[in-house]
Structure formats: C-alpha cells, structure tokens
Image (tube, rainbow, N blue to C red; front, top):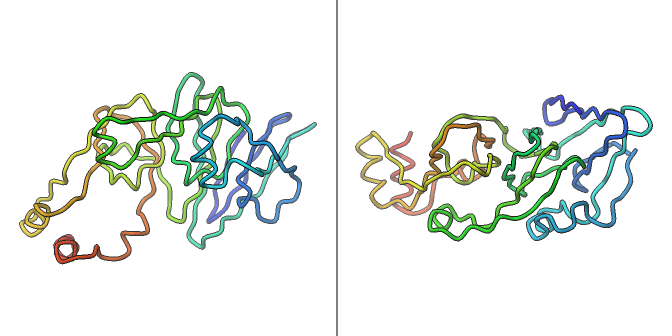
Length: 224
C-alpha cells in the first residue's frame, strides 16, 4: 500500500487482495467500489465514528485479483490528504473528525476513556485508538504535517502514539503585552513529556479571526 499526495488530492495504490474503507464523502469521481452497509470494526469507537460519518455506509475498494490505484479529490480548495502508517504492536490516537478512511489490516479499533484532570484541561476525554498494523487516511481543510514539537494547541493535535504522556500548561509568551494578556487568558498548551512525532494541522479555522472579547483582542494584537 502506498499513498502519493497531490494538491487537494492524491493516489492510493493498493496491492493485490488488499482492501481499504473510505468515508462515504471521500471518493469523488471514483466508481469502482462497493457499499459497506455494516460498519467495519463495528465496536471500534462507534460514537466518534458515527459523529463524523466514518461508521455506516462506508465505501470499500478491493484490489482483487490484482493491484489497483484509487484517485482521491478533496472537498476544500486548500485541503490535504495525509496517510498514517501504524506499525504492528503500536497504538495511535486518531482524531475521528479527520478520518477519511482506513485499511482492513488493523488488529483493533477501540476507545480510550480518559478522566484525569489533564484531559479536562484540553477538552478531550474519548480517544479513538487504532492498533496496527494498518494505514489511516486523513483529510483536513488545512495542511497536515508531522512535527516533533512538544508544545501544540490542543485543536491542532490529530494523531500520536497513545503511549506518550502529556501535560496541559499555560502559554509562556516573551513579549510584555502578551504576558499581560496571558494573565487573563484561558488558553492551554498541549505539552508532550516525551519526544516523538505528532501529526497535526498547521492551523485551525478559528485562527483566521481574532478571539472575542477585550483580552482576546489584546492578545491577538500583541502576537502580531
């Protein structure tokens, strides 16, 4: 299996006898698929997958008897596809909002429920976890990248090895105006305690507009 990205699209090359499940809105202009009425991995994070349309009525492409190439086209002018390869034995959290599809080779898909205070700080309690081997295909209206940064905004985090620990910390700006605004800010930074790769979106849609309120405006002004 090999994914080659292009601008707002890409091609997915499946080897013989491989299958790939696609979110019902993902394939555009490609007709060589079957509808999957019953969801693959039926007990794997069903609520999150239902919410984001990657549970019922998925499209399945089967490379039989020989290899097949699937062409992909996104629904956003600046959108991007991104493939995550999860090795055997590893468990990766994947934000279900960005799932465009996944292969049939995963050992399991399940939900981790987290109730510790750190998860309340980043407003995440239910983690869809894919246990390899397998490939998850992502799509977002903003570019997706792999970064080794340890500090990220929670809304930018898309996927990481679930074994990594993290903390929720306050921003530590260097500018005087930013420090003043930060006293009244409710912003939280996702801080990983171990090194590793994190799949993230480069920016979220909320960043296009200044935050509401006086202190949000002040912080936006100080960051310019």
